[in-house]
Length: 179
Image (cartoon, rainbow, N blue to C red):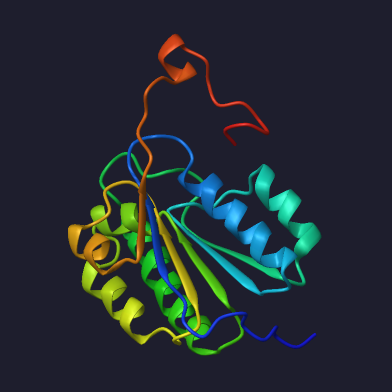
């Protein structure tokens, strides 16, 4: 299957950030919408290395949505390890190559803002990626703690704000809902 012709001539940069739930979920919704229009999507997940429910669902769209993970099987709470840094740096190199290939019309860098906050990759690397991406590529950056320079460069910024969450009452992550 050949890559779909873009429906537009200029992609935008979208940022989903904030402390509330829903950043990855919003990006996945965009991925499904894009695939429904016949666009090819790259979902590159930083700081994540274990399969989740969305991976099983996305396998049904593997002709249009490619998923790559660049992290260990646990989320980073403590200072990052050398393994975390290597995974993120290697992921960034692969994303640069895939982005330049012209194969994808939508590229989602899930948790990349958090990866820059944890110093796994530099904000300058992300700004360079924004500037050098092919003009027609829609680039989506998710994760808490988006750097102000990334926010300034973005075309669309949504901040998820937690108002109330069942975690507060001791309810853990549920398969199919939070993971």
